Image 1 (cartoon, rainbow, N blue to C red):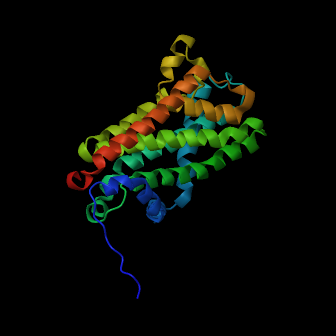
Image 2 (image 1 turned 120 degrees about the vertical axis):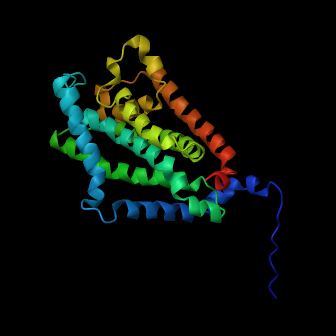
Image 3 (image 1 turned 180 degrees about the horizontal axis):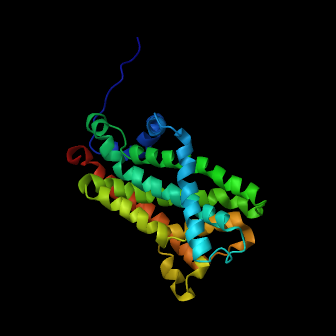
Length: 276
């Protein structure tokens, strides 16, 4: 006869094997991400093209406002649309991840209140969906390079490293806002404001080099400064120089944000089902 399995209920056992449970529930992560992708583009006229239209239209606006009117198109020595697109892609990934993550727990409230699984899976699935949009949007950059006959240098091989840093910043900010939005519903109005302001205070429409030297380190407190500068360094080659003290500070803060957000999320996770 097959021996019967025993169910052991032990205090603190769930916390001890939390990260193992996160791996065991990886199929749920894939399912939630795939569900969100289908829902996002279901019954839409343009479908996946929306992932291309949003960054493309924003890039055109920035090219007209900052490039033509503000005369910033001759600073970098590379085609200005490529300069903007190299920054727009990671910024859109980060901004979309913040907005999707902030509402993810509330949208899946029924699932949270009925079934046990590591709640960390829900905001992480939102980041994956935003990353899919990021990969699709990469076609814009490839098209611009072909149009301007621009060939990147060997630095392009380091791009996956900076994509990883963008992931760290996106997950860190997303986890923190998702947990806050459950307890303080006002954050659903605050997040769009943060994204809107962040677009203009981040070096998307301009190069970080135009920031005065005495303010560069303070400016690098913004985690997206290091991410965007890293993308441009990898894509634009010698045309983009990195301010390494600020770059290290910005990326270090992104890592700190991720670790602190995981701690804060785990702290509030136990009461999510009651508060939500």
